[in-house]
Length: 182
Image 1: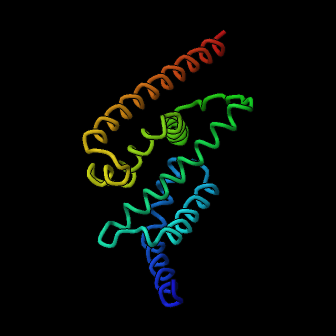
Image 2 (image 1 turned 90 degrees about the vertical axis):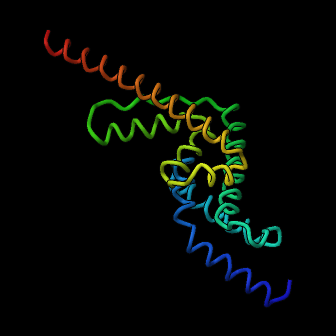
Image 3 (image 1 turned 90 degrees about the horizontal axis):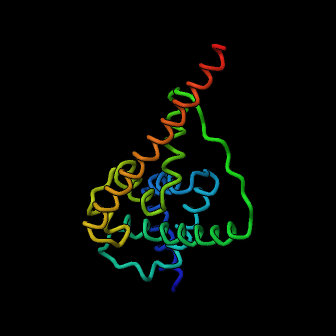
């Protein structure tokens, strides 16, 4: 690649960074939950995009291409974590209690985090990023019917998880009430 071509590619990636970095960050944050790892993932997406520029089909959607790069990077990371988890013992923390807005938000975030990765990705792209079913299908490399089915299953599972959390919190509040009354 000549110096002129190299400069053109760097400028194109920089323009894409300014246009899509925040959007990719939000997607990765909902997949990850950790802001520092999320920043690394977005940065790695653009590093990979720079290296893969020659494979980008001109006329294709740069947005979809960047989401696919990020998604592949996240899968790589999740696979590595699964291997690490297989060899380590982790203790689960107690679920958050209470009925304040902050607690409810944290319970929702915990419930979403407990969903399978594909469910989290579909929910994030559809409801946080506000993408169409067609755009989500392009990003994930799926059919539109698979996106709709996964969205349905994800929302159904999320409702079950939130109902379980609410039931658990209600029981704990009743126990506290009974303990305070005696």
